[in-house]
Image 1 (cartoon, rainbow, N blue to C red):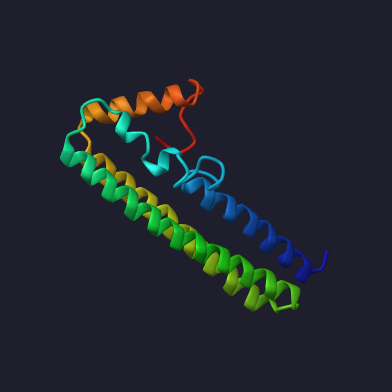
Image 2 (cartoon, rainbow, N blue to C red):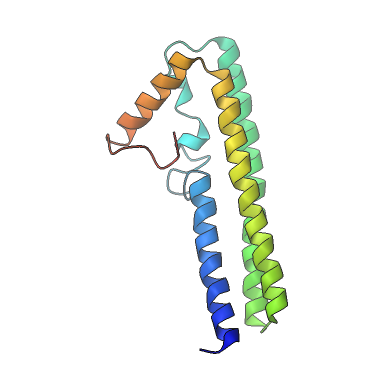
Length: 153
């Protein structure tokens, strides 16, 4: 296989993997119980915790809204980057251009993973240890006892 073809195949495969990684980093595909759709990353499971204070509910609501808005912006940026890469590939862009666009996507995915970790830290700072345990238990039940939910909780 020619070097150019190998690079093209690698970039395309990487784009598919990175796009899937971004979806998993934030709770799956938005239409598949991911962020902002009732999945764990949407924090909608929080009101089910028995002993949340009004202050905690307010903090969680604020966190939910901030997370939703940030994820929408991140996902829009990811979509734009994928479109830009597809356009470049369709126009026969050179390897250097393809590499630059692929690196741009990789940086966006890294930002999404870091943002998810920061959100998780903020969430855990709001909850007491007992509430975190209760939330994890509910997550286990929600996923049918099939081990850890894929969202990392």
